[in-house]
Amino acid sequence: MSLAGRVRLSLTRRRLSPPAVLAVIYGAFICVGALVLWLPVSNSGDVTLSDAVFTAASAVTVTGLVVVDTGSDFTLLGQIVIALLIQVGGLGLMTFAALLLSMLGVSIGMPQRLVLRDELGQTSLTELGALVRAVIMVALLCETAGTLILMTVFVPEFGWAEGTWQAIFHAISAFNNAGFSLFPDSLTGYVGDPVVTITISLLFMIGGLGFVVLTDLYRMRRWRKLSLHSKLMLTGSAVLILTGWVLVAALEWDNPGTLGALEGTGTKLLASWFQAVTPRTAGFNSLDYAEMETSTTLMTMTMMVVGGGPTSTAGGIKVTTLIVLILATIAFFRKQERLHVFGRSLGLEEVMKVLALTTVSLFLVLAGLFLMSITYEGDFLDMVFEVTSAFGTVGLSRGATGELSEAGRAVIIVMMFFGRLGPLTLGFFLAVRSQPRVRYPEGQVFLG
Image (tube, rainbow, N blue to C red; front, side, top):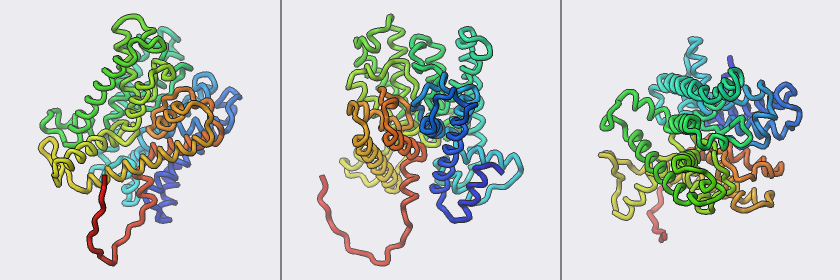
């Protein structure tokens, strides 16, 4: 049985909750990955244990924040390990364990199904097997297609061996919304290359939609037959992308540190497109975020907090959460008891879940900012950007990552960890189910 399977079985016997099992399994993979990356065969010799732990945590949580240069400080073996950690962390540890068990003909028991359900963000135990197969199939198809397209650029530039590996690594990193790059300046060298920027952006946009949406699109293929979740995700993503694209172009067009330094309207539009979609937890950049306007930085942080879709490789509070929050606000002012959208209604349970998710997320970000303010002595905006990026598992940085102290690194690792597991995982882990023994009369609290 695999490491994840043994750990899962041991923890299940001790009756840990599914969120707790997920947390321990992810923590175990981070530790194992860090030890492997620390080995002399995995790095150039300048990587410390702290560097290895941070890199492994960033890879497993598919964040992309780095304290060392992935392309030069890690050997080919180390880079392969990072790619594997990204793949397993992005698609889900339990997803791979479930696939392996099914291939071996071993039935998945109820405790394991509960853990798998939590990892895939589902509310039902039905069709989990079909969703797992869809996850693996979509990932392999997209990463293979991305690799072949990127090879047309990287192979002529680096040769067959290195160019092929560059294409494979960046395809895996992009689809899993990891943001790891083998280039020291991410993709700034390809800011005007439509093949690289469009391919990379399409990969992380597809991965960020969510496998439920992708499966729904494949089965239904018509807008009116799509589920409510798919319609909300597609509509919300389109609005966020177009809004971000217009704002980045408008705010940065004449900035000499970003778009203003580029020649040609097409190159500027391509660069602004990439900067508009990459905060959706992708983590790649083709412009220097440290040179961006304060307004663009604030907009980027907002995008990072929102993130992508449920059951996807993306982080953040998710697009559907933002939409339900907006709908709940509109319903409140209209004095409606239920939310209505696309001919469907949402009840109190969905609103309560969204409120819990938003509250826990806000608490985590504020706690992370408070702890970072104790240890970080640099620019305040850079610190806020770093914490937000870690929570959203984005990986974008304004240069603060390399200046972090050991305590600061620990804070960012915790933020990445909870950002990947999801704030509700922490809430369910801490919650205790209880039945009230006494019913109290209703009271009134004045709000607002």
